[in-house]
Length: 172
Ligand code: HEC
Ligand code: HEC
Ligand code: HEC
Ligand code: HEC
Image (cartoon, rainbow, N blue to C red; front, side, top):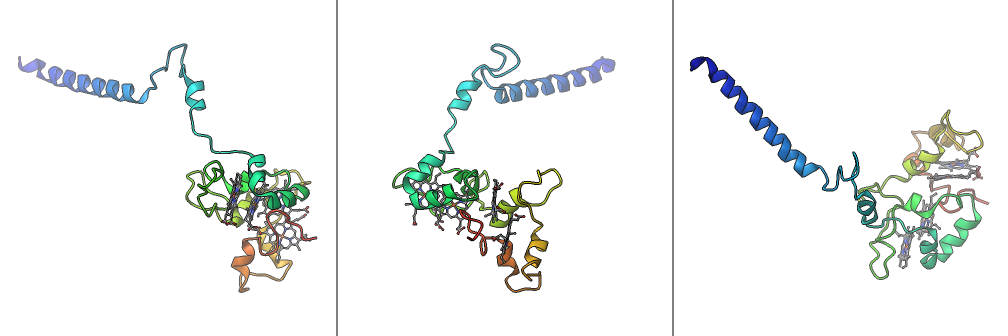
């Protein structure tokens, strides 16, 4: 009898591990997985039922005509409102605007991204960017205006909108 005990113990461990895996699998695998093949059968419905986060420029226009008009005429007309301001569906419901709407929110909707990071995400000089697109290196760009890390307005200038307006970045 003594010489089979270790096999019994091993079998118990294997049974426990397999049952834990089966339980975890039944919780994690979506119900319609495998219905038609190796994917979630109801994926279209799952995606369709997600709440809408973005509403598009026309909706913003209905309340922000002044901003829209300026943006439409100027350099940033090809950049949608919500690229810079973040998803606007919750904000666009009448009488329920959560304010302030950050210039741009991270995907969790809480943490406002610094304007510097927003501008540089499109305008940082990068070898892979087409040369027609305006690109700068922040510190060199500010140095053209004699603003260096020692200047007292350095931090503010790094936020770009002291000189460039979001809707009309070139001052003319
Ligand atoms: C139903 C009307 C309505 C719609 C639609 C709407 N907004 Fe607003 N929005 C407001 C109001 C009202 C305020 C507050 C105005 C104020 O304080 O001057 C505001 C404020 C803002 C602000 C300034 C927040 C701040 O910090 O001062 C931004 C940015 C903004 N909206 C962007 C948008 C964008 C982008 C869209 C489209 C996705 C949009 N809004 C759609 C009504 C609307
Ligand atoms: C390239 C980024 C960018 C785009 C695109 C953009 N905005 Fe803005 N928006 C900004 C910034 C930055 C500010 C802060 C104020 C400034 O630049 O003078 C701002 C400010 C605002 C404000 C607050 C009012 C004010 O003047 O301070 C509203 C409202 C607003 N934007 C709505 C819109 C709407 C509506 C659109 C689309 C038609 C839009 N924005 C497109 C960057 C952007
Ligand atoms: C989603 C990308 C995007 C973001 C974010 C963005 N821009 Fe732009 N920006 C563009 C595009 C596209 C143009 C138009 C380029 C063209 O005309 O070929 C432009 C044009 C400009 C120009 C005019 C350059 C010229 O010589 O005509 C300036 C200045 C500028 N942006 C500054 C800013 C600043 C400051 C911010 C932050 C508030 C910002 N941009 C955010 C995409 C972006
Ligand atoms: C001290 C003012 C000042 C600050 C701060 C500033 N800029 Fe500029 N920038 C200018 C001027 C002036 C021009 C020339 C175009 C014009 O007349 O607006 C320019 C041009 C540009 C251009 C076009 C370059 C090209 O080759 O066509 C981009 C892109 C730009 N700036 C982005 C930024 C970004 C991003 C920031 C923030 C890191 C920033 N700027 C901060 C004054 C400034």
